[in-house]
Amino acid sequence: MIREMIEEDIAAVQHIARATWKDTYTEILPESVQQKFLDSAYSAPMLLKRMEKTEVLIAEDDNKPVGFFNMTRIDEDGDAELTALYILPEYQRKGLGSELFAGALSLLEGAMQLFVYVDDLNDPAKAFYEKLGFHLLEVFDEDFEGVAVETAQYVYRMPQPAICI
Image 1 (cartoon, rainbow, N blue to C red):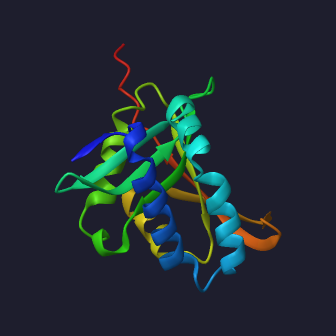
Image 2: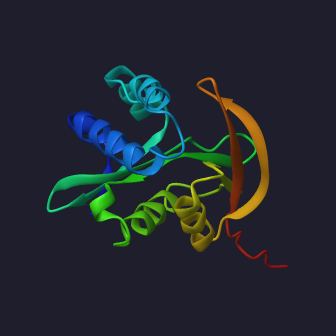
Image 3: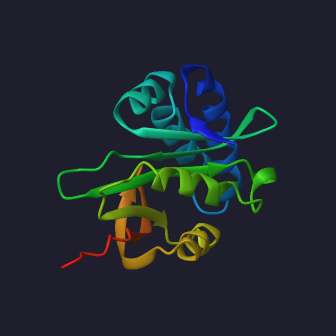
């Protein structure tokens, strides 16, 4: 089941983020960098702020949160950014990511495109986004918490209604 995040989900979202990052980034980023990022991005105050200012959806299995999706709201250009899509490792490849994405698309009425930024070494995530219909725009160098990384920028162009003349 997909639903909006509530305050009682904060501990579960923190657990999902930590478990997913450990599984994904152990060979890509130093543990200290992961910890610094997670402590900042997934603190309780930051999650409360995300709930207020962005869209956060929860994926449940047996009434237990096992994944989440976070994206910005649509800006004046019709763009939004997918900022997080994490599923506990033992629940991956069961369709929950696709269900979260479908739930997010229902919130994007009127949007033109959805962007996502992925570490270029995160091949499973890149393959997942490409399977959903995202297209690679560019790969660029950036600094992530003091570590040089290559980031891939993807875009999902929203289907636009046909114009009748």
